[in-house]
Length: 207
Image (cartoon, rainbow, N blue to C red; front, side, top):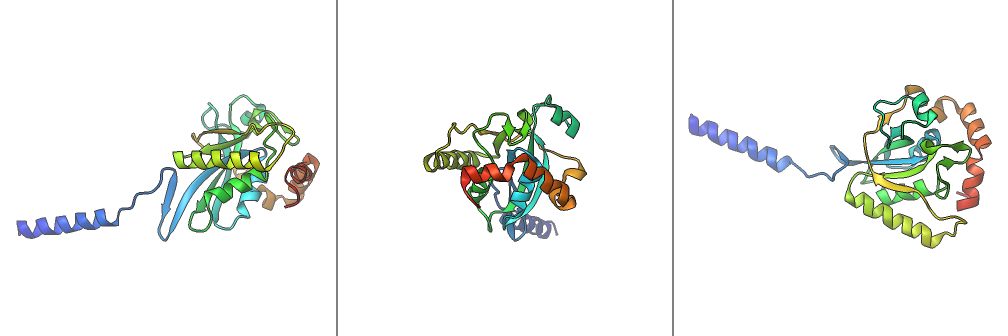
């Protein structure tokens, strides 16, 4: 009986070990897919959420705050500019359907990477552009992507988008999530008045 129990235990352990897979740092495993995480700050998170949710292979996009010092910040605190956080989006994507490199292309083409502590009509460090990397592979791909942008585009000012390690991401309040869908009229009014689309076309051409 003891020998039988030992074989059962060993067999169960072998099954566990055989079923284990090593996931890249910063990724989220899901059965039948490879869910990974990317984090970007590109000014107003309403606009960045819209941009990434349109990408095939993106599972979900959450608006929030990261890169600062205050725990559990509110929108009012971040907007005041004293928390160090940037308005950001956390993107969960299926790497079998979309690459991290493509997400980087989406990021660059939805920001003005030459503006310090501002994006379009929004000003303050909370609107700075940042790419937060979750592992060394992401860091390398970001740096390569930035170099490619610098080679292919001639901007009047240098690219100043920050490349920094990811830190705690705090989801924004519920009313900010999918704002462009919940409040389409107000969102379009804001986006047009802010000059976002017009400036992006100047920088990158028509989408």
